[in-house]
Length: 238
Image (cartoon, rainbow, N blue to C red; front, side, top):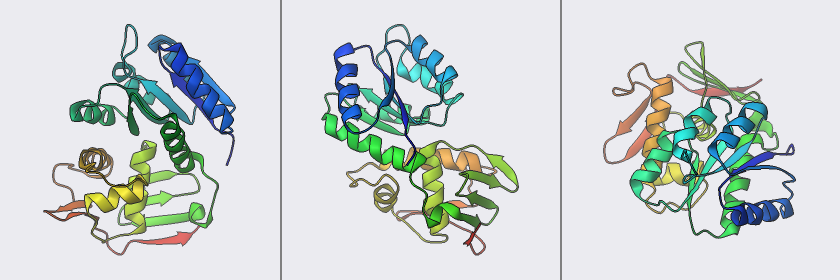
């Protein structure tokens, strides 16, 4: 794995110091920090990050406010850190482009574990599957470049949405429950995180469907789950 570059955005200096110390002990030496939304945006315009830990309650502008602007400059995994733990807050975070959501107070080791999972997906060590092309109907994924096209047109996907599509393309025409999807794509135990799955399904449909409200490819099987319908999805070595 290449050496990842991280950005921590929080107005609590003690929390930044604690996270920076723990992450550096876990062999993440390239860490930048910011305590305001303006500083975070400036850093994202100048540098390429692989993962961003973003506090919601920042002075002047919230993490929710700046997340869409950060997304304009980076495909880095974004993990919100916040004391706001309602389902509405989580749905808002995912809808704005976040990949994960950790509520305060948190166990620092949990943050490290989540960081490692997202970085493994973002920039993980190449394997045989990283040199495959998946063709699922009009959808093509080149895993060596993480490039996705739909009917020949390139589409840009946030990291977690890309992983969701890749999972479905690896298992075309197979039906999966929300729990199975969550445990395979997020690699965590499913504890009723159906909102997380539903939000990302909706975001994926907005990218691959002509009419996301009436999907032709990623369809719902009422009461059972979802499947990617293809005309014989397959994969091949590139």
